[in-house]
Length: 161
Image (cartoon, rainbow, N blue to C red; front, side, top):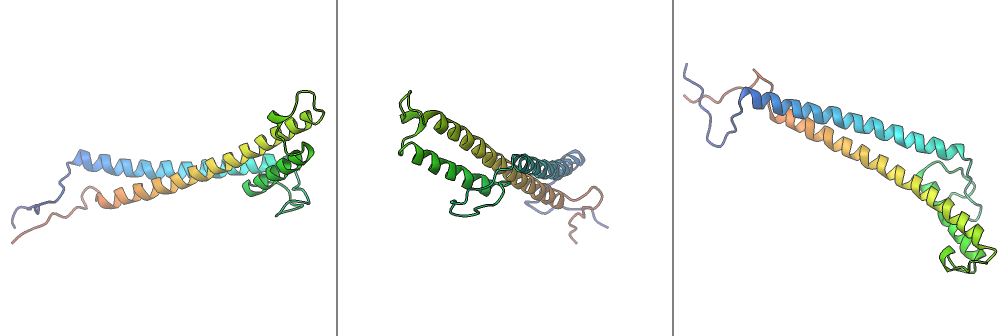
């Protein structure tokens, strides 16, 4: 039997490099799974908090009228409806454009705060979705690294005759 010969252009890893890369791949898979779990928990928590507020989308909403707000689309639609109502009350003026002594100013300010709170939940849903997506990417990268770097003892050297 002849000695193993490595073909030109092949990557040769030491035992430590092999172990290190496989460990990095495993860490990516575990980290990705954790990101997905945290994303699901965050999504469910924000959804539960919105449901606990018992917000119902206004009947004059362009879509989802009468439904309870518990998701990102619901929250966005209700925030848009609140803005429409506030602008109607203030004759098209925003809070900043109203005179300090305008009696509608306090109501428009409350509407602005409500919209900001709903938009915060929309952003929270987006961050959870992003974290879940990054988790999937981590898992795929980790899996790819572990496939590309064979386990110790399983690598077969290229033999020439």
